[in-house]
Length: 303
Ligand code: F6P
Image 1: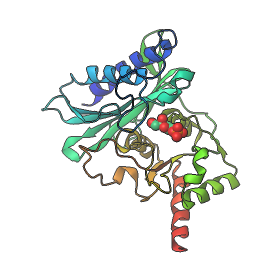
Image 2 (image 1 turned 135 degrees about the vertical axis):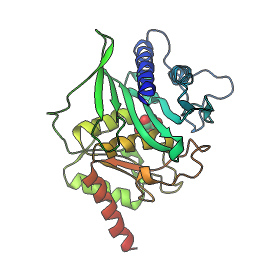
Image 3 (image 1 turned 90 degrees about the vertical axis):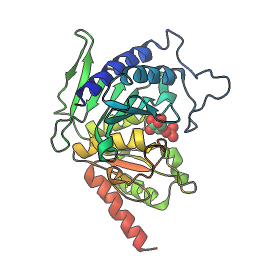
Image 4 (image 1 turned 180 degrees about the vertical axis):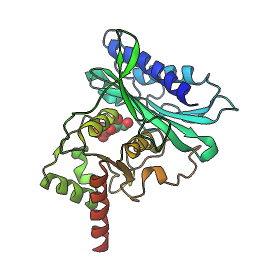
């Protein structure tokens, strides 16, 4: 049932990739020029391409009868499309937009929630606009390994599934290390543990690209909350939950760095209206995430 939604998202991603590729030539780099306010609900500066990408997704998806509503990073409230629809589609239309003007990889994160089952995320993925147009789809069956990674073949205008076998695993972790002074003790302890065990740090600053590398090379991706504000940066509904489903299907794990709950099992209060809530997150290799949880327990028991 959700195949039509996913193929429509794919069509949109091909159009967004064109926008991203042509942005330097068409003067589409830079901030969105809005007279009163050029920040979104999360206080990020909105770029021209954020708006253009959002418009593409909304115009294509809102006509599908299966979709009840859309929840986008760029809209304050969920947009109701078809009262008879069964699903809510959530998305960050252009993730990593602060990297756009430098031509660094960006992406689109998407997820499909089942309204009849308490907004359960049933399918998700991302597109990455990079050396190629990559598209990851978890597939429909949550118990089957039908996850696929494909690349858009411009010579035949379609996505072709690629083989990931043979990619060498590496000891890497991904975190914005300039925030070290704002992390709480458990995160500092964990990153020190990774360093002592031969892991090296990588950070592109586009969640899609950092997650994509983590999927292929192994390791963990982390964006914890700040010690004082207790606010993370990444949004639960259209960033963390879609990525958490990908890791669950790959045998990995995603947890909230504060409550230590599994991201997909979190009881989200008011998920319908509160679409921009944030949380701290660590996700990736199951064993490495479990080490974070165990060290956390030991530290807490010493308090
Ligand atoms: O959506 C927020 C985002 O752009 C993510 O794609 C990325 O992981 C993160 O922010 C980068 O944050 P920072 O600029 O703090 O490193």
